[in-house]
Image 1 (cartoon, rainbow over the protein chains, first blue to last red):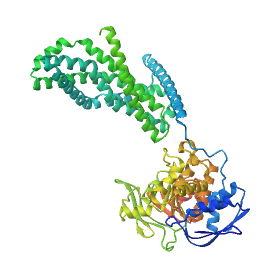
Image 2: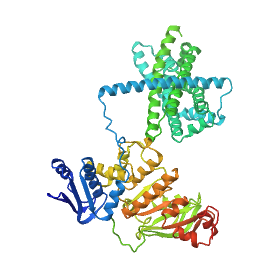
Image 3: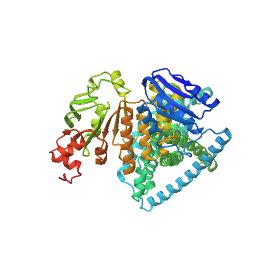
Amino acid sequence: MVSIDETSFALKISGNWSRQATVKPIDQILSRLKSHPPQKIIIAAGTLTAWDSRLPSQLLKIMDYCAANNIQVDSGQLPDGIKSLLKLALAVPERASTRRGGSRFSWLSNIGKSIIDMQKDMYGLIVFIGEVALAAGALLTGKARFRMIDLLTFIQDAGPNGFPIVSLISLLVGLILAFVAALQLAMVDAKIYIADLVALGIVREMGPLMTAIIASGRTGAAYATQLGTMNLNNEIDALKTMGISAMEFLVLPRMLALVLMLPLLTLCADLLGILGGAMVSSTAFDVTFIQYYQQIKKAVDLVDFGVGIFKSVVFACLIAIAGCMRGMQCGRSASAVGEAATAAVVDSIVYIVVADSLITLIYNRLDL
Amino acid sequence: MGQANQNIPHITVSQLTMAYGNFVIQHDLNFTIEHRDVFIIMGGSGCGKSTLLKHLIGLQRPAEGDVFYRGQNFWRSDTRQRTQIMSKTGILYQSGALFSAMTLAENIALPLGEFTRLTPSEIADLVSYKLSLVGLAGFEDYYPSEISGSMQKRAGLARAMALDPEILFFDEPSVGLDPMNARLLDDLIISLGETLNATVVVVTHELASIFAIGTNSVFLDPESKTMLATGAPKKLLAGSDDPRIIQFLTRGEGRTR
């Protein structure tokens, strides 16, 4: 507890000042100092039974207030331990420019800030695409430098390792499509057209789209975290100072691997999706496997496959760009790496859906 | 401030063997750390200094042997008792190990908020006090990435001291600091150890630090995989007959007689 001698303004500190004790806040002393500012105060200790950092921290608060308001403090009668702690705490005075105000902004400035951020993002994207183009140019002229073993590892990660999940999802999507189609077509007794609907839907749209979305979650996020962590460890700086282009050494093999593998995965997804449709129509809606197969042969030609495969190449570029860009621009902290992974997945899904709509529109105009 | 029985050593290490699987790092370590010692764990690179620290602070279990805190067997205690012992220790990791997503104030307030029942305003006062102790007054709202390496170390020290520990562990405190800053950190360690009445354990191979701050030490040898000596570093330099210790303590130049 603290007692105040009113005439000389002597503070006497006594009792238990450890963390476990209940101590009255010193605010009343500060308000007393505020209402009747004295010339000088004396801080002394009575019988202190126990104390820890709590005591000097509170004393420091009083002393800071006094220093700011030109009140002299005599702390000479405190025990040596407390005196030396206070001396240490006051040894490096706070510099005037150090402290910051709270970072509270109005909603208007928040909107402004987010628009500026978006502008920066766009600029970063354009620069990144430019750098990717330069690296791709180097690749085409055979000057790009990266390790073949890296490329093969990324190919394995992006392709074969993703095969099980892609097959499962596309088989189920085929099943679902067939069910949705069958329930409607059965009403007009046109169940044989389940085959057309499933095959065209899968090959032209759902196959590439689902595969790309899976790849953005698996591969795109992995790219962002890998590159983000490398940035955190100064590995990207190390490459740059060695004179090796990070774009060629890190981004190019990742991008190449995905561009090579995503079309193949899409092809698998197409076939398994069609198989899923066949399973539903043959078991539940008496369209035999042979009928289903014959109908698909009539409905789907190579152009349809080509349409889907072309889409998947575009998607692969978009996923790799989103993932690698977020990783390369990642900040240097643990939370920044997490943010980069999230942003990579969100970005790539948005890019994929927008690109899909555009490509479908173009195909429509071109009568493909 | 803890006023415990001063007759029992603060930390006793007895017949300690450290190993990763079958690979033995160090064996048969025996030494004691007294109250208010500034104890140096020294030795060449790769001799297991940091591993020894991990055994002392509960991050790695000994292959054989025991660690006692005030006579209480650390590794044979249950988890709750170990947490109890660890709550009286503060550790400064090599890189500071500040949480990068939190401001300095939040970093230091974290243990205070978790382990005490102080009000937020009192915690804020304590945070300001701890930061001013390490010469970082006014840096409450900065993120670790916004301050320099030596400031990060000092902020890490402020966090290590948050709960008024009885023992402070330092893992290579002067790594990555210029000589002036390393010296300042040494001074800080000494004055804090004195004013807080704390026992200080430092892992280092910086000769300047070893002689400037050490009152007791243990010397680990990577070749024979055991300790060669324990005692005050200055006494080891003056009195040891082991050429390996002399080589280490004189940077290979030998003792000048």
